[in-house]
Image 1 (cartoon, one colour):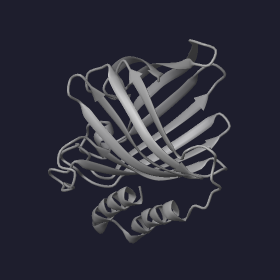
Image 2 (cartoon, helix red, strand yellow):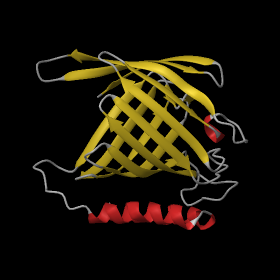
Image 3 (cartoon, rainbow, N blue to C red):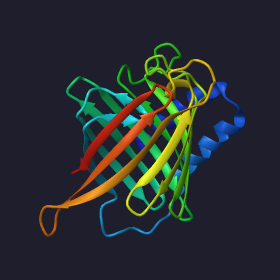
Length: 240
């Protein structure tokens, strides 16, 4: 696992050559924290697996591939530190596998780095053919309110990131549903300029279906509007 983390940390610092020292130092801190966490061992394995199935894959107000989408994940958690890979695949040939590392602190603050990888050569990170969009992500949760901020460092032609792409989202959890609004620029709005637009507006609710006394399936339903592209989407999914 440490070897995997080192590989993607090296890719991040290749991109950072053209960024300022402050950002590079911050990402270096994330890498350092990932190796310095001293949490008590639990009785269960630190590794876990999961799988979701959704009618469509919609991310930040944009639909990817042709549903239904199968979305597996594998992760390692040690105290406040998590490292894993999340993916999405469908019958149309769409494929995505995203390694990530994150730190989640007890008072609601989280931060980390994600590598959005949509196929192509694993080692290719150039502007024109790059297969990786590298993103710093930050989150804060206080009660029912969650705020997230995301910044993509690099331009990668293979995944259509522009570089300096920003996405912000606020979510509020009511008793029986959640409401969210998010916006961004760059690849979030399919724009080459820096204009920031709302692109992800919607409602989400969850219902648990009990199959046996010891096994239940949570089902998620979302109504999503993208004001930027003027699209309405309905998504339903469940977790295995």
